Length: 386
Ligand code: ADP
Image 1 (cartoon, protein in one colour):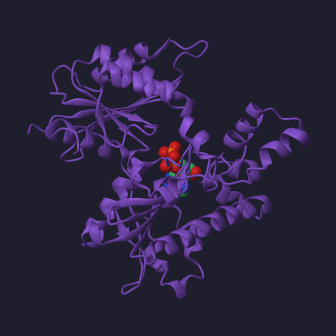
Image 2 (image 1 turned 90 degrees about the horizontal axis):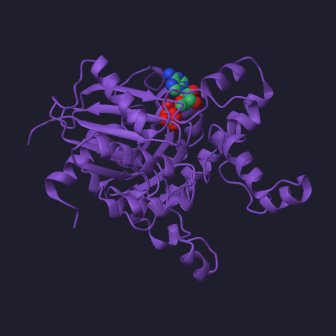
C-alpha cells in the first residue's frame, strides 16, 4: 500500500477541525481549525467556504492537497444510529441516511453532513464516515435497552448508543499493546475524561457497557453537562421553575456539570479554585469523582473481573490528583496507583499502578484522528467488515 496521508475532518455546525495524518506512522503533517462558520461578521460564510479556507491554510503550511498523494478523507460523524456499526464509504445515499439521523444528534449530525457535502464536492478522493457510536453497537441488549414501552422505543429508535467510541476503541487496543497481552484476554474499563466524559467496559476488545446513552448527556459529570439526573427533574423544573423543554435541555447541556457547580468548566481552573479553598470547586471535584466511582463499580461487577483501568483525554491524561482520587480506598478491590508513577507527567502511554498490582492502572493518550485515518484506510483496502 502507499502510505499517503488521510485528511481527517471533524465538522460541527460552526467549526471545521482538520488533521492531515499518515495512517501507518501516525505522523501529523498539519492540523488546524476553521472557526465561526456562518456566524455574523465572519468571512467564512458556509462549510464550502470553510473547505476552501482549509485548502489555503494547507498551502500556507506547504501542503498542496493535489500533490501529496492524498489517499482519502475520513469524516468524524457523532451519531450512526441503529444503521451504522462500521465505517462506510460516503455515497449520496449514505449522506442521506446520515442526514436522516439528525433528530438523534441535532447538535452534531447536521454540521457533519454540511462538512461532508462541502468536502466531497471539492476533494476528488474516496470519503469515509467513521461513527462515534460504532464501537458500542456490540452492547448486549440488556445494556442498550431503556425500560420504556417497547413499541415507542422502536418507533423512535430510542436505545443507548454511546459516544466517544472511536476513542474507547483506540485506547482499549493501545492498552493491549502497552501491557503486552492479547486484547482478547483483557477485561478493561476506559475512562475518557475531556470536556465530554464517558466510561466504557470492554471485554476482549468488544464494548459491553458505556455511560453515554441516546445522547451524550447521560452518565458522568462533564464540563458543562450534568450527566445522570433523576428523569423526573424535567417535569419538576417545568412545573416549579416554568422552564420549557428547550430551556431544560440547554440547562443540562450547557450550564450544568462542573460549570454549574463551580462556575468553571475547565478542570485546570477547577483545580486552582479548589487549591485556593473554594468550597464549591471542592464539592464539584467530589461529585465528579463520586460519579466516576459509581460507574467503575458498576463495570467491575458487569465484567466480573478487571485487568486494566485506563484514564484518557484531557483530564484523564493530565490530572494526577483526579486519578488518585478515583482509586482511593479501592486497594481491597486490587486497584491503586503508585504515587510517583502517577505524579510524573508524560506524553506516552504508561502504567501508573505498582508492580504486581492485581489490576493494572494506565494512562493512554487518545488519538481519535489517527484511529479515523486508520479505519478509513482499512475500509478502502479490505472492503466493509463482514
Ligand atoms: P475535548 O473533550 O474537547 O477533546 P480535552 O480532551 O482536550 O477536550 O479535555 C479538556 C479538559 O482537559 C479541560 O477540562 C482541561 O482543563 C483538561 N486539560 C487539558 N490539558 C490539561 C493539562 N495539561 N493539565 C490538566 N488538565 C488539562
